[in-house]
Length: 216
Image (cartoon, rainbow, N blue to C red):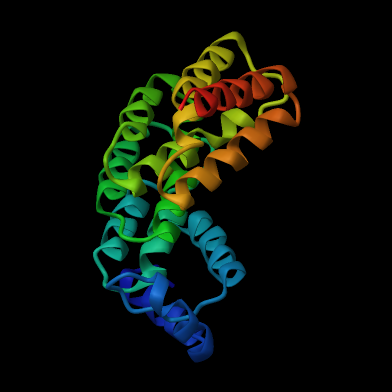
């Protein structure tokens, strides 16, 4: 069976849960929430990634993102979440464009998961992350943390990855003190991930923040 935007939406609606949809309504922005359980979404995404190749999959994702349905937007991001993709420039550009359009933390975090894999294959894309970290929009600042989170989890980073981590640590000290609690909490999680295998750098960041707090 051909996988079209219509068949995807029909499948998602068949998996809808009214009670979960009600609970999601406050977190779905202006979109309709169906209440599809996260693991069900992930299972569908895994199957459809196997069934639909690029560039058709990018077209499918674009059509789903345009739908006023919370889970359709999450699925759009999940369809682009893949480690190895040849000629991924258009996919990276689309993810960045959607980050600027995202209205909810859930959408943003799904996009960050997709974008982080594109950064892993091309660290020059971290320039976009640093720009997001300086944005006035809290969703953008959280995106910067989500996109760069895999760096914090690297147990044996390469020299280039260590340099990328150090660049993040410069603005992470400010993210830890962000006025938006969703940003500051994620920054704290980022640092805890780093601290599991690089206590020296994580401790340095904590000391910088503590010093700044005392001077204030």
